[in-house]
Amino acid sequence: LTYQGVSPLLDHYNRPRNVGSLPKSDPNVGTGLVGAPACGDVMKLQIRVDPQTNEIVEVKFKTFGCGSAIASSSYLTEMVKGMNIDEAARIKNTEIAKELCLPPVKLHCSMLAEDAIKSAVKDYQSKSKRAVPTIGEAALASESTAPTTQAVSV
Ligand code: FES
Image 1 (cartoon, rainbow, N blue to C red):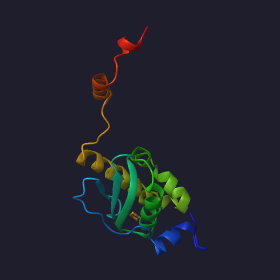
Image 2 (tube, rainbow, N blue to C red):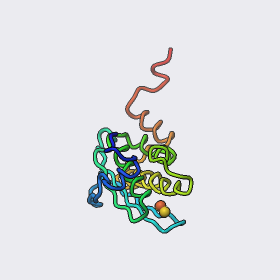
Image 3 (spheres, protein in one colour):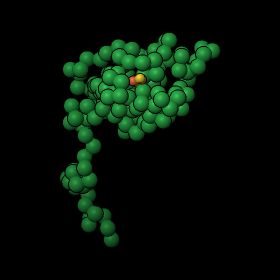
Image 4 (spheres, helix red, strand yellow):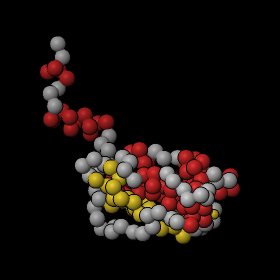
């Protein structure tokens, strides 16, 4: 990522990337709407996912909150674009806080971004019923399409 001669925090705060909304009615869009109880700030993060590859192809956010929360969400949108939804759901707020050099008192602002992407991924999965099957379901599904273990063993 490139920054224009200022700290990443100020750069994302002054020029937030990917501000806006995606249509909630789109089955390939997942929406995460989360709040920080500590301060009352709110973040909405939306992802559009390619259902064939599970890749995040578009991201938008709107944050009603402090500068660190705005910068965290802006940075997050750049991070997750092009990522697989499983990878995106594993993002830790510490990665965001480190990049933006957030002081300890502002860690909860990056936590809001972590919560938002997790919630957006969950919404996408539940909305489109593309939740990862449990092990039992996966086994049943593979039994119907693939040869059984017995058939391939010697
Ligand atoms: Fe609440 Fe930053 S002070 S999110």
